[in-house]
Image (cartoon, rainbow, N blue to C red; front, side, top):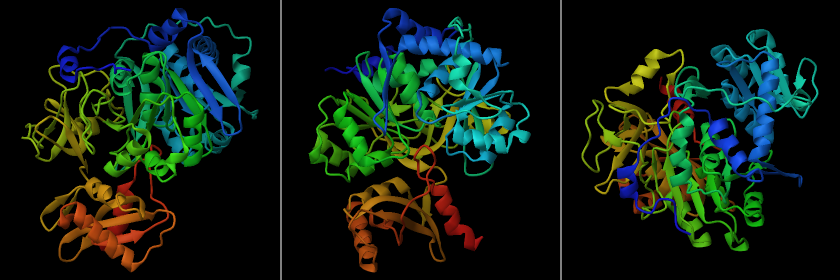
Length: 542
């Protein structure tokens, strides 16, 4: 099967963004697929208990119309914010679709939020409605007195005093809510993103965000209408918007959804082997865990394409997966603030460890702090050119925080806050977050390269590398290591790992300190929170 992108350079040269004045994803995509083929599959849902359900685009269209009408009856209007805190339940897809349809701003949140987190989000966004499950409804009740803007409370799969049952709200409601004529530049989504300091920022996307993800779905995920795509992602982070919603559905592909209480590598492989899943997207942590299994026990007859995102994927993991499946995991790069910026597209010769090349429609480069483009193989800031034309899918700004917005939009560029190099052929190579780079004895050391070297050793399941204080060198490389099954930490193993890193990368990059740990702090999106480890390391000297 040929990929949607046959010639990278030709597609880049001819690509032009659609720039409609009015746009509503519910009408342009969901209703359009429903009208074209009422039996077209949109969602194939399973859980850990053998339950299974399927929904067509026609089903999603009808249910989202009913929910939009129900929300309107409860006082939700165009422009209002609706917070949705649900796991991988069908109601999540219905809720996002309903909010887009009616012109409400949907703000997804992870089920791991605390009551305090929820209160902050409600207050900051002035949300008028919350849709969640029973466990999180209890959290909301605990801070309801702090959430005075809320006037609609819907709970899924439960009965609770002071709440409207989700199914009961839809019962008897007519599917008579055509999509609102929303402007393409009208607010549509609000994601809360955490930085190294301060409270989470409100990242605002407009309805044109969906247009930006057409390149994600068509060229990187390489999807077509007959595909069944599995994105192993929490619904609370933007990767779900990328690969569980806008990307697949814009191409007419169906989503495979596994509603689970926690990730299990063996169960993941079982599902991949049992169901006709053709394409898959997962965070690096997921791939790192599945390659520790005996992959020779599994066959994936339908799987044709795999991608990874969230943070760079270690070359060793890519090689192990390729030996077992014949498929290269193709990296992609982007942020909550963006769509896919850079990817290892199927037509490109893969360069293991590289993020690939810029997406069609994205003028991406490596620049210095003043916005000057740097020569090949020079480390600098990853930035998107936003003048004279701003690409589709780039966020509108940080709501209520003009200073933070101004700090990332400088001159002709949006600065991502990440560091990379670009080689002479245009491939990008990730170095790290600007504040993750380690400065030791005059050397600049990116954590990713050290982590990639460590994971090539059979004793290492996962690692995180940060700067650690040193009286002589200022700071040195420290590695926090989770050991693979069957290995125990020892001084001998520390020395073995240090020598191993010296043998596969520049010797000055080896970790002078190694600490064996049972787990690593991570964001809900699966990214390692190096900032948390770094703060602990430096706490005693500050």
